[in-house]
Length: 110
Length: 114
Image: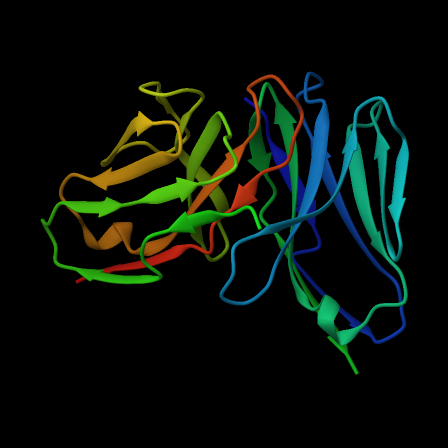
C-alpha cells in the first residue's frame, strides 16, 4: 500500500518568515495530494491541493509543489503569522482513499 | 454551510462496553471514513465506505465494526471497548470514489475508555 513520510515533525519560525514542509510518497498511482491544517480541538481542514498533472499551485500565502519523478511534494507558507500555528498533514490519494503523513506541528513566534 | 457532524465531542466509557460513534454529513457525499488519531501516529484508517451498505477495512479494523444504512450516516462501533481504544476519532467524507477530492472532516470525538 501507499506510504507517506512527512518532515519535519516540528517546525518553529519567527513571524514573517517562510515555512516549508516536505512529504514523500511511495505509490506512483497516487494522483492527488491535499494538505490539511488542524487547529487545536478541531478536525483537519483542507487548505490546498494539487493533482498529479500539475507541478505547482498557489493560493495567496500558501503554495504546493509536486515532483512526480521524485515522488515528493511540499507545502510552502510565506509571511507566516501567529494564526498559521497548527498541525499540518499531507496526504496522497488514489481511488478516493487517502494515506496521511504523521503531521508537522508549526509554531509561529510573534 | 456544509458539514460533517459527529454526535459527541467527548465520551467516557467503561471497559467491555459496546460503544457507538455516530457521523452524519449533509453534502450528499458517497465516501465516508473513520480514522483514529493518536500522538506520534498521525491519522490511521479504521474503516471506510463507498456506498450505502458497503464497507471496507482500513489499516487497523481490529476491534471495530461499522454500519452504513443511509448515505448520510456512518457509524463506528466498538464491540467491546478496551483501554487501548482511548483515542481521538475523526469521521470524514468525500465525493465519488475514483475522483480526486479532498476530505471534509468532523470535529472529532475524544473517547476515553476506563
